[in-house]
Length: 482
Image (cartoon, rainbow, N blue to C red):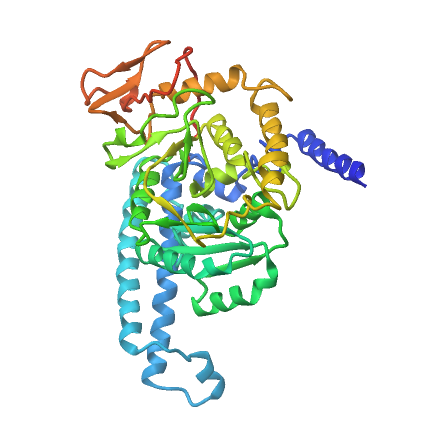
């Protein structure tokens, strides 16, 4: 059965390769052609042009506001003239008052008229440049830019998804809910939980009801971290995902650290992951570096690029997580701990062109004092930290080290070196200040102190260097921007 499944899987991939239409396997990306109708109207504009994305977003937002405006006008009319028909009464039943409904109408009308003015200006500019034909009207543009919507513009979207891996720790539940509801008052959030002990499902269902859907439990059957986090990530709607484990809560409990974290991600579009627990700057020396000595002057946050960061908590940009394929479920069987998966995905992010960093923003506190962590109990300790760590570290080295059964090799050494030296980041860059001076990449074998903090790298980006152990040679790297 297993061999048959593998053959069928390989046959599917071969079919993809033979067709030659996909950039990558499994339909991640496709080479898609415009409809002839749209090519006729937009042939002078490439499909990835910023003008088309702006038009798409404006059309999408216009429709949302127009829908609210018209529906609320109908509701207000029914409030003033209540229907007598029972079906009509149910159709317009609401707990809102007329003042609130009128406010929604005014807000939507104002937004709609602003959008219309922007649309007129952009379309006029495109016509003047000869990028669209004089016969192309607004509805043509609506049709041909709406094939791919922007989910971030959907109403009521959380910006942050908190994702908890949970197993039989009921005394910690209320602490997490209270802490994360405080976060939700600062940044729109949602709270997803992989409940690996589904016999506790009723309590989680009651919490979902009492928090009006803020708590979103997912019932699993002891699948453990790798599969649990991937499952939650497939449901998450936030732009940023905070990975949590049930044995630790975060302090300060007022969640004052969250806006600073989001600000850092927004300032660095290539930043995939920020560790909040521990960091590794190398497989050897250099881990004594103090992150408080490094500052991004653009955000005033303490932040340091890290070779690897540890679960948990850690925070990942959702699009980057999807881009690299999530945690590697092949590292363990269901029900086994995910040890070394945090280090493995750290290296994968760097290899794919993303950045990994550490920020000293929070402190951990036990969620259930006196109760050991889930992988530190007698029945699980050696199973995770002995058996699973042994096979997972070998798995890791087979991919990123010198091969199965070996240790770190040239690739990890060069990557370690790259994280040390940094690079000239062209967009969303960060300059790190170490004890008052800005470091930027220099010649092989050294890190050069910039003459002045204002010194910039070629292309306008600011230089970056983080000292972390030995510098072994020059580095090349390509960047994928989100």
